[in-house]
Amino acid sequence: MKNFTILFTALMISCTVSNDAELNGAWKYVSGSYKYNDSINKATSDDINSIKIYTDNRYSVITQILAEDDFFAHSGSYSLEGDTYTESFKLHTNPEMVGRSATFKYELRNKQLIISSDSMEEIWEIIE
Image (cartoon, rainbow, N blue to C red; front, side):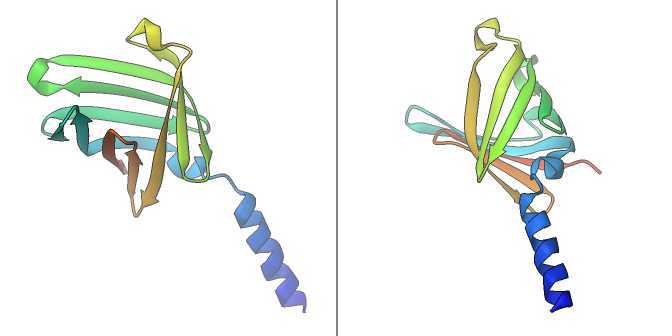
């Protein structure tokens, strides 16, 4: 019975630990699929150079679109609830986005983070 109590306690503690810690670290963009009107555009790290950094409930991302020699960045807080991931913009290259948020579905699979919505899916890989 003592072993069962220890196992049950450990299981309950692991269920209450936040997934936020699993995101901590630096992630690089691997690929994405983006829907615009009736077309789907696909991109890889050959097209887009991007790094996303997570610490606890904060994030920062900088992205360079190589063909256009253009970049954008945003930073703020994020939250996880079930399989839902929400970024709240505190800084953004587009000032109209400050104070807004964006919500996605997310999944951690092996060493990849998959972020998706109705109009996009991105795959990120942890940098070790």
